[in-house]
Amino acid sequence: MMNKVEICGVNTSHLKVLSESEKHELLEIIRSGTDEEREQAREAMINGNLKLVLSVIQRFTHRGENLDDLFQVGCIGLMKAIDHFNPDLQVKFSTYGVPMIIGEIRRYLRDNNSIRVSRSLRDTAYKAMQAKERLLARDDREPTVEQIAQELGLPREDVVLALESIVEPVSLYEPVFSEGGDPIYVMDQVKSSGGDGDWLEEIALRQAINDLNDREKKILTMRFFQGKTQMEVAAEIHISQAQVSRLEKGALEKIKREL
Image (spheres, rainbow, N blue to C red):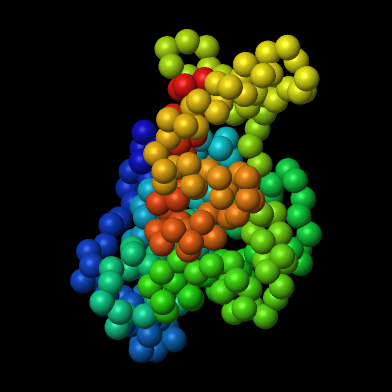
């Protein structure tokens, strides 16, 4: 339905979509045309990619944020992508533009988080993420926290603290499991220790962990008992951070089902 409504006064059903050849032609004018030509081409490039912004903000609609605000922020990311894109690259503009738009929206959400993080800490976190992207592009593999810290000339602890500070907090009312009945929320699993059933739950938890495969056990051990980040785990077991995230989530889901 989103492509049939108005956002920021724009009728999204009437948004133009540029072909790749049209985008390339406009980008060349932006790079080498006269001032007037560049301005007109930039405006056409922005208007011709608003549907790209629209498609990106749909990923964030579940957060309850105002769509007009997200759309405007996404447009800022689009303009940054247009200004920095190199037409000589053998990639589609959307391949470069989508991460720029997502990054701008995520920065907006982090900066407007209910838990306030100091500006210097956020700046360090953004620099760390930029360093991570540079190292990933250079080495074609996920960098470790140590490598990021070395790239920035900062202590490892400062980088870890900064990256952890911008992770979005989980609500106590966030559902963690639901299968046909009432969902289980995070707050349902937060309680004091020392109850009569604690030892039974511990046995059940140990059994559920034992049913995991070796890789899943190792990932959970490194993440929750050794306190390592997903990037550190990925570097140690030689897989990507995205794979670590998927395996970790799958292992936790198995444990939840067992319990």
